[in-house]
Figure 1 (tube, rainbow, N blue to C red):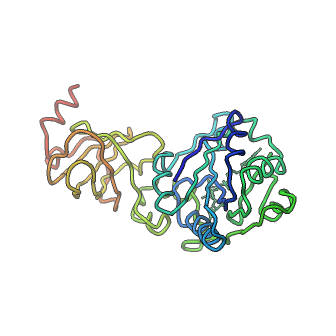
Figure 2 (figure 1 turned 120 degrees about the horizontal axis):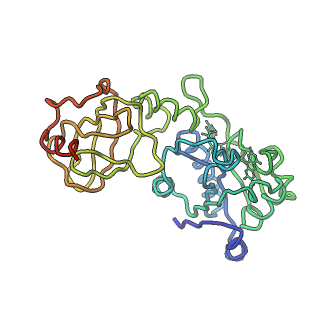
Figure 3 (figure 1 turned 90 degrees about the vertical axis):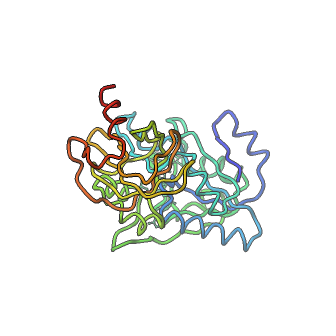
Length: 285
Ligand SMILES: Cc1cc2nc3c(=O)[nH]c(=O)nc-3n(C[C@H](O)[C@H](O)[C@H](O)COP(=O)(O)O)c2cc1C
Ligand SMILES: Nc1ncnc2c1ncn2[C@@H]1O[C@H](COP(=O)(O)OP(=O)(O)OP(=O)(O)O)[C@@H](O)[C@H]1O
């Protein structure tokens, strides 16, 4: 899979280089089951038409740009993880469009003309609620007309879980309540966070959302053997490693969150910490 960061400065270059393709559209934070349905539909059409499949996403999140930074988004994954998951879904081309004020003011017709038709899109796939163009005025029922009849359209119906539309927003809300055990129902996999281990605490990479304060049953993967452990998320959003079977080396780890097993007490549970001395050293600075 090739990743292309699109902006007004390089758009003409990529338009010239473009070949006919099927495109899935959306922000796709978390790549949950609804997003997977959109991308799998695009893949299916790509296979039928023997054409490559592209995904067009945006960065940063439109909400942060349109609110002039006053609204923050609790991202579920950084672009690097989005790339990894899209690769496993069989996507050929990943466009990341720089979302700024100028881009947000493109009319629906301008967006479809410059970013779909001129990038070789012959068939666009998105969910039933996808909106595009200034003030979000474009929708799936008018996309074909906005393309001058050049782009076919597939509108994916709503994917639900327990009577609710699966969305990045409802997943963020669940994480912030500590409901990590519900993630597989929404994401189709467990929630994961990449972080750096300094010997005691785990520091998450940017663009992840940590679950609510508490103690969690997790699996750690990294340079050591995959192992079970407990991680405490504090009110200060610090993560402390409890009960690992063997001491991980300092460096990068992935935490896979299984379930919340207890409250985050204000002070560490010393008796549970495998390496009390290194924690004491850490606390004393
Ligand atoms: C060219 C373009 C312009 C947009 N302009 C606006 C806008 O002015 N106001 C708005 O609320 N959303 C705007 N959006 C954001 C969309 O409404 C939508 O939130 C975004 O494309 C992410 O889509 P998704 O949330 O359905 O994945 C724009 C989107 C695109 C592609
Ligand atoms: N539950 C769903 N069923 C079908 N399509 C979906 C679903 N959720 C999102 N989509 C589609 O997937 C693409 C990406 O959607 P988007 O990133 O807006 O997801 P979202 O989960 O609804 O996000 P948010 O909660 O921020 O609105 C869009 O084309 C959207 O219409």
